Image 1 (cartoon, rainbow, N blue to C red):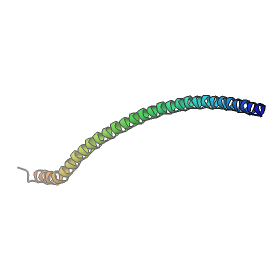
Image 2: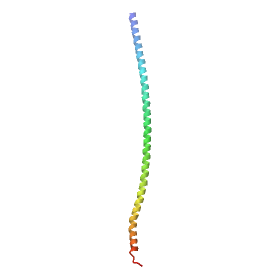
Image 3: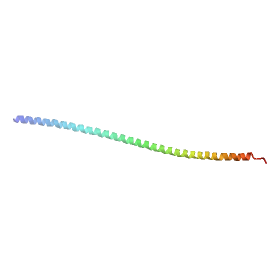
Image 4: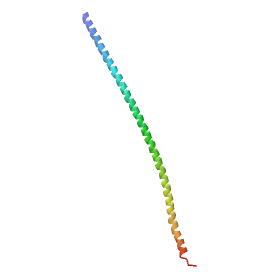
Length: 110
């Protein structure tokens, strides 16, 4: 019986050693996986920062473009308003000037 217990104990110790080896292997695999995951997360973080910078640059260019377009709109509105005023003035002034010219031209000679 002592031999049986001794043999059982040795089997248990051997099994525990095998399990400890498996635990060590699994711990090593987990550590490697953690390192790989951290590297991936860092790469993703860097990519995200780069994309954010590019987005901000694009938004800045868009705001600048919109600002320039708004300035152009104001400029052309002003020019068209001046042209409108000139045309309206011509519509009012030309007939009067023609009447005055006709009056001077068709007067009786002195």
